[in-house]
Image 1 (cartoon, one colour):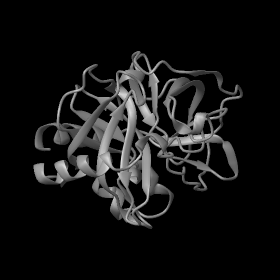
Image 2 (cartoon, rainbow, N blue to C red):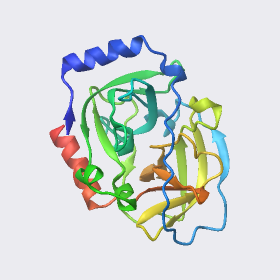
Image 3 (cartoon, rainbow, N blue to C red):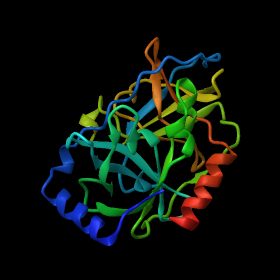
Length: 254
């Protein structure tokens, strides 16, 4: 767990006032060679610009942060399991090469009249994210963040059940609209040999880390990385019982 005091949260809020979160580009999506299972034959379809104040887009937003270098970065995060926890990728919190990011804030419905900013009081990372090396580490690329106040629109559900054959990806992409507008696309889904979930996509690759993969308002995974040998396939962690235990601990102990 990473916890932040009221003084730290106030300092973070004041710091972001002097920055320009509207032009913060999404962080790059890692390219990692992965063994695949058999991907679906049909490609994604139905790419549409989402309405930022509509559900589920209203509970999806940008997690803004400062990198150890001092540069700004962002990932997609989503309210889950109630109204005070966010789900994002662990790589958005702690990068194994550059270190731990800082000064986190969450912005929903960015750039609209419904825009809201949430401070972060606590972060829960899976222990295996920092200890596991190689391709296996990407099974643990998820994290939970506790917000200082409740979500206006609630949150989505989460499950560790087998992923359905079709999922909807919702969130941001650096390759569309400069990463400012929420996008949505339906994708075929499959399990990989590395116990990850894979989706065939059309345009949401670059900058889409943390985008939730949803079916019937339930999140089955999030965008984690892609295989440079097969860039038309996005990959995400398969949630397990350990994921749900960390979710429960984040809700109770953060």
